[in-house]
Length: 451
Ligand code: TRP
Image (cartoon, rainbow, N blue to C red; front, side, top):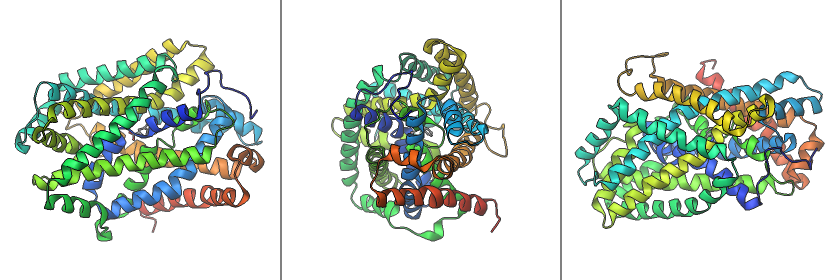
């Protein structure tokens, strides 16, 4: 089985895979979510826990998920079924694939709404909506999210864009888009960091907020948030990287590519943090002001700097593309499954799944305004879906993936896919069998108040 190919095709090279998987990892999670949850959870200590989770849990699980995909060569649901049979294990493992499909649908429903904000900001940037006055900038943001028609409109634009790429197959447009996107995004972030440095004292205040840990700031919920975010930002725990792994040529090193991807993802997140927090302090804003954080800070930088008009437009365009290359991986598992099991064309599968996600997304968009009083477990629809996926479904998914690769699969198959020297293989095994699932388990017990 190791040398078979997926019916959906294969990446054209190792580099193409790295680009696509980095495209899946780098997205709103890095630039929009990481800064605001860091702000809400007190800064440095939270960042440290998050980095620890990326290394000790994220990378080993990314390797596990990728190798399972490459060995199974199908959508996650069928891959899990096939691998379970191969290992002589219970067929019910394929329900793990189903949980992933559902998580992907739920995540994309709100991801698309936020990506819609970014599209709206492209136009605000073009038409000169940015100024150096933080009060004006905040008002611009508050007006946007209070407007249900606008939110639904931009969400619709984003969903149509996502599904039109998915329809063509992940390889076609995606590989090319990411190739110029990543370097450009990186360059703009560096520019923003450069701007942040001009804020004087605030720059150092920002750095110290991000990098000097104060552990009294965090409780078990903050640890869960950091761990959940490690899954979210790397795109783990729901089959996205499994399905990308299923298109991976057999001779590519899973270990090395996983490290590159996690490394690139982390750098982008940290740069975003370094660019944003100085602006937060320089303008007397609250680090914990929530999901609007980047929309209330970065426009001030663009409003102030020379050439800010051009950079502002470029930045939000790139952010939309970064979101697009992530959103594709969120639907690919369900689309691949529909093609395999229902015999649908990619187009039909994309239209059906896209419509369901769009509909859910409309509810999310309304949860920021006219339905803001409607609560599930005391949370708005947006907060509920975000917490349910990032803090519950992805960690459980990741836990099961680590257990599957570490304990259920025959280790000679795992060895074959990872193709590592013995000592390194043992390190991976230790992390995948004990550290990763153990940490998820302990954090869950702690949050549930068991100890
Ligand atoms: N990693 C992406 C981001 O940070 C989002 C994403 C893409 C994702 N694919 C995923 C999250 C799979 C969880 C699971 O923006």
